Image (cartoon, rainbow, N blue to C red; front, side, top):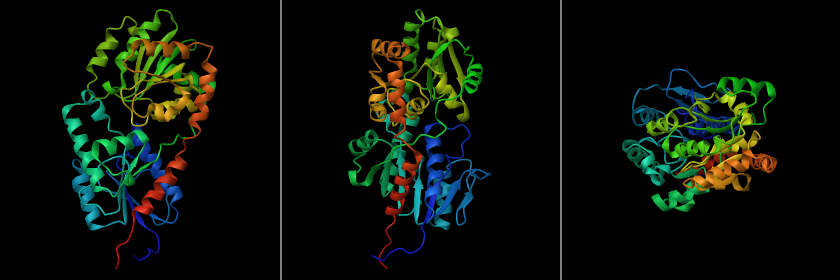
Length: 378
């Protein structure tokens, strides 16, 4: 087999990285692209953007952004056409679907298979689409990146992807996630509607059934009578099937103490985490659970469920509970709210979070992309 000389041209679907209000997959896409550009100094990168404006990224000689806006079926029609006209050596899909036209050396990141574990938490259409698109992507790609060992096992067991075609590359945590100063915490408390002397339980993420928010509201109600200064903050954009969550909040006897501020700007997240008394992520399933680690890095004690990748990611640095056991959720919250063990969990969390960096994620991903390319004989 002939050896490759010179840099590879690596195409990247950057459509998710350009979204303004970023959740986990969009943030991953943005940060992994930044690290690839920073570390892949011997390669050329071509970013495909579904929009009219380039993404604000450092400019490097040899790299380019292709602005190819298209209203619908962007991946299947517009990106495929672009790749057919201007092929690349390697294609990376960090948070989307592999297009029908793609090079042999295509790598895709699969974030989770939660729609198989909790099908009732999705609409019928979204569940069918996620199943179809994931099946297609893992078969079309020559290599698959899983963001956790949990997702890797799911891909092997549910979609029969061979183990040698999957690599686990964990997410990282931005360096900005660290304990915030008093002034910043006072500002975000004011924005959230939480007084300076009040404590609050915090959830950060999309408001949808998979996040188990109805049980979190019920657990808060069980504690609130004994904790008159305690509030519950559910921060994030509204997702699908939210009506029952709305009803649970509206019917709560402590409705005035449940705050739903909507999407929190990324710049404010460190101060929001730092201000929280407890961060609760008791999801029915998570492919990774980045908010748990971000909260740990900011010095907040964390409660997570024993589902999906959350125990894998948080290790012994969080209290882990059965998300279906109301009593266990209440007990976990009470333990973290109490002064006796609070500092222990905070220190454990900081040490655990320090193990996850985007530099490591970028290095692992770049190695996979380079190894995916093997020129044909000729």
